[in-house]
Image (cartoon, rainbow, N blue to C red):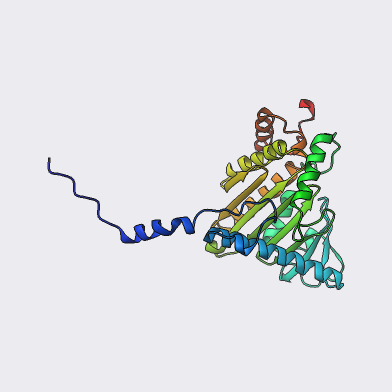
Length: 292
């Protein structure tokens, strides 16, 4: 048979391949904010991650300064154990809201309403009593203090939700874990997205990592792009119609409530699988007590 012709050169692909190492890899993988600085950026991906982190810090600073000046921040009253202060960027709350406290009925932000609908599902159990391992607790303290720098939120400080009619940025700390939800939900499908980040806990890194793995599995099973490293999990969903985005954010709210305190319970791979099965079956109140 005649020899096969050599594959045609693709100069564009070759050029992209020659610079891929300067674009694709992510080297800024420090927990929370520790180690983030412009001079540590080695790739374009690093620069994007740094800019995102800097934006989160700037939004926290905006909320802190507004609170110190006595500016207009509303406290969201709900059964969720988060001191959440709402900063309305325009169209996020119903017209005529004047009081310091608001409820979900006052919120008109589509992503905020969808997320909180999941977080306030009556089947969830936010509050519970569970014995804490002294070793795990001390490990959490050590890791928390190690991660501290001037840009990391202290425990007990308010969480802030920056909202508009179609936008939400929520940064919150509950106990020893930290989470971020950033989302836009509107009628333009190409502009719709949801990003979720979760890290930390009150036990040793193995159990915190097990919880992160559980979160990753639950969100991946519902169409999210996910990645997980140790106790840090990231999840993303993009370019879906508004109704699908709202359902996805409600799911994020359910997962957030379901995994609260679970780092103390996930002492084996079998228990991770059991909790995954319970969630998928809609048993959101399950905390594994009968298996302790």
